[in-house]
Structures are given as structure tokens and as C-alpha cells.
Length: 237
Image 1 (cartoon, rainbow, N blue to C red):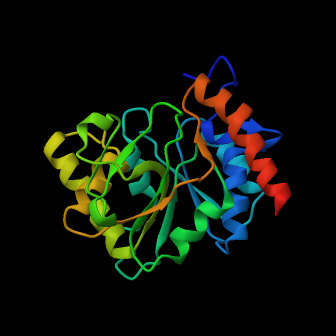
Image 2 (cartoon, rainbow, N blue to C red; image 1 turned 60 degrees about the vertical axis):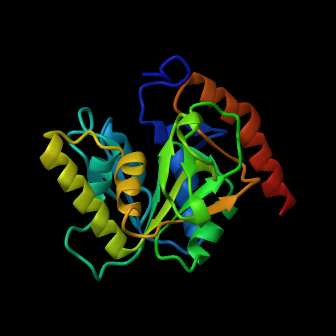
């Protein structure tokens, strides 16, 4: 709804800039990084994602049928395999981000089984700030003043080991049992909860070029500032 004046009725991940969708670009970046199997959790206008996946081998769609009343952790839970401690690591990406391909390099190369990517200050507004003493996730907040220290901005690219994913699912189940609803955020809720007992490394790329599209102001910034910079970086390679 916050983007209706600049894009038509479509999921945010299918917003196009210069003829390429946000998720289409992410899938291309993942392919280039050697990741062939991609799962998209769809909700709003899920049929549009079905058409997107039909043209791309290795991309599957999982439906969160309660997307309108649930939080992002409910969507992630649909994609994770409950009870499978032997499953492969997973890379969790938000659908509405645009980023340099090199954002994937440190998180895939990290020796830490569970890790999340941080950037330097972007000035984009609506940032999620991360407190991570000694490089280990402690907490996050959209209010910088609430944190004792700031390690960087949360980007929305996180690596989970199979045990880490199971702990995310457990934190979600406990939340639902206690609250009676599924409105839990995967990052400020479940990831922070898991970080209390399991080390989640924070990987800072201070000069990372990236942006998130939540509203009209974000769309304008990505279109006018982030996307042109990404094109310059691509042409320079």
C-alpha cells in the first residue's frame, strides 16, 4: 500500500527497475554465486510469483496463506524444514532489497555457521540498527538511541546453519504458544532470540551499496541513487 502511487498492485519483490525485478536480480546474483536452488515464500498476489518461477528452473514457490495477519517469521517458517538437523545451510534474503553482488561473498565465505550481513550508515531512513559486541549479534532496533552500541545497519541477508534454522523455528513456536498469534519478525524477533544462546556472527561491509524498498521515498532513493551506482560498479568490473 505504501508504494501504490509509484507501482501497480504487485508484490514488492516484483517491482521492476530498468526492466528487471528485484527478485529476478537476486536470483541472478545467487546463480552467479553458485546457488542453484531458490525458494520464494509468496503471499500477496502469489500467482504472480508462480508465473515468475515457471520461467526459472530451480525456483520453487511456498505459500504463506496467512500473510495478511502473520509476521515475516511465519513466512520464513514455511520455507524451513522442521526437524531436519541434517539439512543444508540456507541463505535468507528479503525480497525488497537491491544490493551489490559482493554482498554475498563474505557471508558465503564466513567460517561462522550462522551470520548476518551489516553495512555502514546509508541514511535511507527506517534503518534497523544492530548491536553486536565483539562481532556477535546481541540485539537490533529501529531506534539507535535504544542500543548501547551500533555495529552497523541490518541488510537483510542472513546465513543459517541447519541447527540455527531449527532454533529459529523453535523460537517461533514458543512465540506463537505464548502470544496466540504469528506476528513475529524474523530478524528483530526470532534471530535476536536465537542469538542469546547461539553465536550469530555479524559481517560488516562498510561501503556496501544497497537499498530497501518499503515506501515511495525508498523507491525514489533506489531508483535515483542506488541503482545507478550499481550500474557503474557493474560496468567497472
